[in-house]
Length: 366
Image (tube, rainbow, N blue to C red; front, side, top):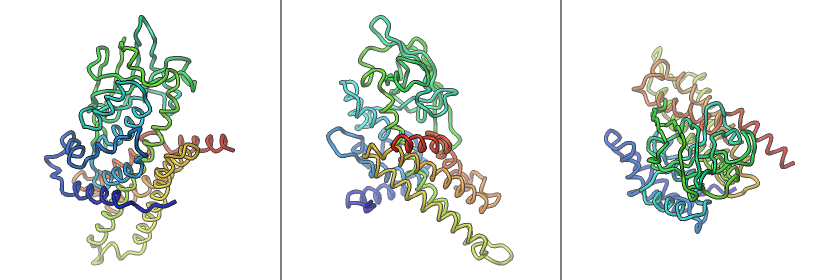
């Protein structure tokens, strides 16, 4: 596969890296940074559109830059995941929301996880029933990433069958101010934000259903693959920066009159970290380039997540160990990178889940 970037892609990578490097981090964070990225950097142009070719490589370039700079923005949740789901949904509401997202005027976020269900979408239990000409939703969602920033929620609910069934899942568009919806914000250990949702007798019109009823699983699995590719690209950027910070630290720190970088055993550890980074980077790029190939997409994404999870654990732990006690201090950047890559190991599923998923896909394709 060809990993060469086009001129436009190279310009996007360089300009975004420069913007993030020069940003006044103390005063431009959170929502204000997101607005600047959408307006000044034109990231709204990367929202998926039915009339243009997929922009998976551009999405990966953005995620890698965000990971390297350790910037918390809802790009993955809004542009990549919600944008993909809205792109495949018919109806005026979906089209209007997608347009508002591209203009930076709406922030739709997918809500799928529930307490006790782990990572398999088929375990979704939140019920949606058709009553008196409206949909009624009852249940809870947990740890909705970027939930505090959401103007709308794309709620995955069960309209038929029982938890564990592949059929019977549907997707609903729920504005944040809908009566019956309670949003409880919470911070995450990596400095980001999430929210828990409680839906009690929440009533929605028929137009709130995105796509056909009972058939949302395929779209959700596609969104998972896109999210995994984005998370792997973010991890690639974060891990590359961790390796660079660690190499620089060992070159400056002295012990027994010598630089730590002169000790052969520490040089070997840096080489091991680099090899993990190279393997993870290759798997990440392969996942990105296969997103437009349905028969290979899920296997490539699952494989990339397994490799990236191992890299996050090895490089993250080695970087902290090589920094000594300073590696766990908030004042040192490596500790903040460590918390982020630790969460990236299992954002949309842990290593064991993707090993089992890869094996199931391989057997199904045999």
